[in-house]
Amino acid sequence: MKTQDNGRKWMWWFLGIVVALQMYFVRELLAAFAMFAAGFAAIALLITMVYMLQKTWEAAVARVWASRSGFMIAARRGVSLVEDLSMRPFRRLAQ
Picture 1 (cartoon, rainbow, N blue to C red):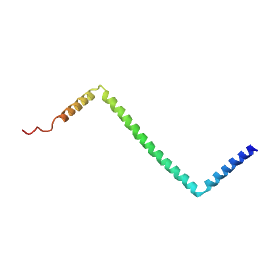
Picture 2: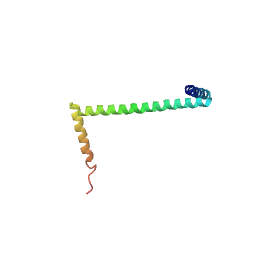
Picture 3: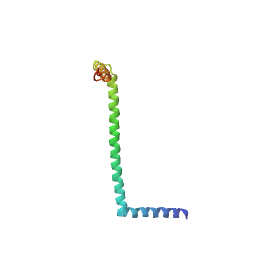
Picture 4: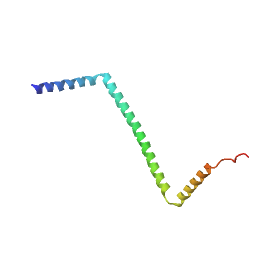
């Protein structure tokens, strides 16, 4: 008797779900949910892509900056020179 009651319970649940899915309002809610889920997934994918591009660029710049090529040695000296010049006063003080 218990298995028959359990089977009937699942049958009624299944029929209730089928009837609910036939209702226009439920279909519209499910369609709206699917559209919002797709939109949020697209935004998350875009943010992830930008983050990964930034991290890749950061690693590439760090690797190039650490290289021992003549061009990078000159660039580091130039950056050091610009930093030194930026710390000096722009004009002489009035006397």
